[in-house]
Structure formats: structure tokens, C-alpha cells
Length: 334
Image (cartoon, rainbow, N blue to C red; front, side, top):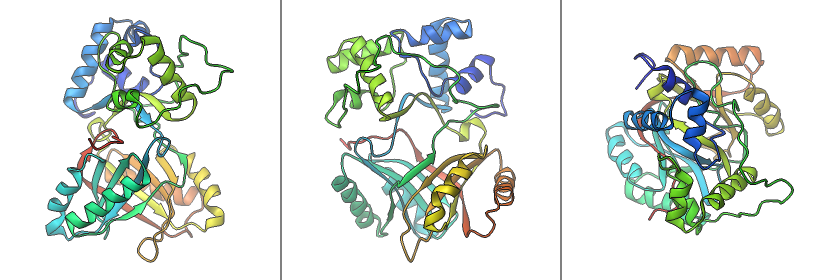
């Protein structure tokens, strides 16, 4: 699916408006249908179709990095003739959820999640042995602006609707402290079932009452374990055909200031600090730029450097050229 074909008004609303703040009510699709003046079954069928077409990855939580388990961005350098073989080995690991070719000496970039740091390092070591190319690890240090979603026009997923859980959690603190042994995490990490009462269905799987499932998810959101709950789209299928990782070598004392300034730019979809790996990787501030084509991305980068007066800061642009894998994170490989 892409924005060049006709998208129905209902599809556009679902893709734009429900990337976050998904209803925490027993019948969430009925709540959405009420807002869209349609039927719950129509909403479910539409989301199922969008998922089958690849425009929607899932409807469910996006977990904040390192709040449960451990995660890192990793990269390796493989000769062009070896890249597909190497990428296949990397993508075959269940701990890898994103795997892209980018224009750089480090030409394969992937995200690894695991139950803890020890397991994470074991996965990276295994990838190095199996591929013959040792990856560098660039774990998140600080996030400035991350994962606000993509839209077909306007500001998608930016808090258009707010739903309170049916039980009040104010003043009670966070009651549900998730861990990787929590069956609820296992049940929801790949998405909610697209059925009339998804929280009831999840409860049956994990031995919890429907309201308890809703309550626990609300508490994980309040604690920042879940950074957003809603429709998770695939940007390429929505017409964002070009994306680049724009990396900066910012003096350490200025990272926070520059990160905050970059976070306010409309075309910057992600902004976060990661460590340098000297001497091979001198960059410590990462921004993602998405656009409809390469020209649009480059124009945005030029505009950023000029308007924010960042022309003196060394930077490098790494365009994505191939997507080998994109799915939701799984914190256990079993």
C-alpha cells in the first residue's frame, strides 16, 4: 500500500488518528467506530485489510527502549557481494526486529532486543561469529524525540484523542511492574487481537480478568514502559519512500541543547543520543528524516543546518536503500 493509490476516508482516519491513545475500554473498536460514525465490525475489517496489505504492522504497544529487557542499535560492515547473505543471517534472529541496508561503510543496521544485557551481548557475539563481521553496538543514551508516528497529511498520532482507563489510577502509583516473565508482556508485544473485545481475549490467554488487563496496560503507559499504544504503521507503505539517518558529531557539552532544538523540526521523526565508538564511529546524536523521496529528505537536511545554524557541526547522511526486516520487538527469542 502507498499514498499513490486511492485511500478511503476511513483508512486515512485510522492510519492518521489512532497511532496513539488507543482506547483502554472493553470494546475499543466500538469506541473508535462511534468517533468515525461507522460500525465496530467495519473498523476491525479495515484494520485487518491494512495489516494484510502491509500498511499496518500491528495494533498494540510500542515499548520504550530498555524499560523492560535490553536493546541496542547495531551496525556492521560487509562487502557488497556478501551483504544479502549476512543480512539473511541477521534477520533470522528472532531478537532482531529492524534490519536495513544504509549508504555507509557500516552498511547493515539492525535493532536487537533481549531479556537482559548478558543475552543481548550473546546475540551480538553470535551474529559476529555467524556472519564473520563483528557489529558495533550503539545503545540508547538519551531520547529527545521518538516515535510520533507517520501520517498521510497533518500531524498523525499527536494526541488527538485521550482515553482514560475505566479504573482510576490517579494517586495510587504504578501497581503493575512488568518483567519479561510477565505473560501479559508476551501476549501483547506482537499486537492486540483484532476482535470486538481484545482485552478479554488477552485475559483468557494469560489468566487475567478483562478489567485487570486494561488496568495493567494503563499502568505501564503511566510508568512510561509503553510509550504509545495504537496503530503501528509501516512508513514505506504509506508513501514515505525515502528515509535517512542523519548523524552528528556534537561536542558533549552541547548534545542536550542541539538534541532539543532538532526535536522541534517537523521533518525530524526521531532524535536520540547514542555513544561514539572510536575510532570507527565518531557520531553521538542521531536523527531520522523521512520523506516522500530523496530530494525531499535532502531539502529538509539543508533547511535544518541553515535555520538552526548547525553547519559547523560535522554530520553524515545515511540513506536507507533496502529493508530486510521490520516487525515489533520481541524480548525473548523463544
